[in-house]
Image (cartoon, rainbow, N blue to C red; front, side):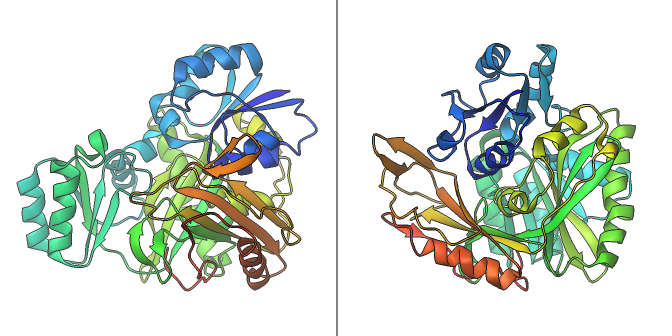
Length: 420
């Protein structure tokens, strides 16, 4: 089987790494890929959002396509591939609206009584600011559309909330993604992420995980795409899992069926364990990044078998198994990320990683004989261990081997008491 993975970040490297272990795959491609992915897959220099070129390449080279990032899913790449007769993994454009429009997602939760924060939607600046003054702080301001994980401001005072409205609605920091904003109550409690495989009818949750969004140690600084993640979370007890399955996961799958847009792919549930029970913070329509990295290192079942079963709507036939223990991913980022940063610095020290450790590339490129930085998040050092402490220690030991100019990372990844 010839398989193409769309994307070029750490999530896509982890997916390619897992797929490369499948005996059923004879040829693995990735577009555009990166410096690390190029070691296990043939990379094609095609932008992940270029639907026409991706379909053309797939028709010539692939039997099966995995669309991994949010943007091409929101643009309808799966729809285009299927129209061209190519089997593709991932939700279609309509189903991917669960992530591409927070207003749509909130509407689904309200209509089908799925627990989430109370909210209002605004496209008018003055109306949004009046609402903030009326309700006070803390309060949460979210850009409606995709914003690389950075379109959420948890404002602890009114001034911060008003500024967030200005730079989303007036300054258009997120372009059309900020044409409207969702302003919602600030829930309290620890956050847990549950990614789930679903074929539109059956849903199979993966191990629980937790990511760390803030840029700096101690949950300080701006939100990022994610500075690290670990799994499983000790906060996600069997009792919480049962409640989430009955009150959130199954109702979401049934809601999408009822809307005529069944969701097939990986459905991401960002949850907050509030004093009033688990509530949905957000949906994503694909593997989280960096949650995919520790999760996939613990997956025992052939990932391609799962993907194919989802496309064929026979997920109920697959017995998904996981390795015992824990896994932790620590992100090495470029200095200045998530704001302005420089790239083009040589990366050294990738050899000699501790046992059970993989280095997933997110923003790297090969230039001759050297590997150089090419993005904000550069590497995700991911380690397995019998315990979370062991996995975390191994990941940080691996970090200690690696060097590039202006690198930075958090020193507190893997602490479950921290909120994401």
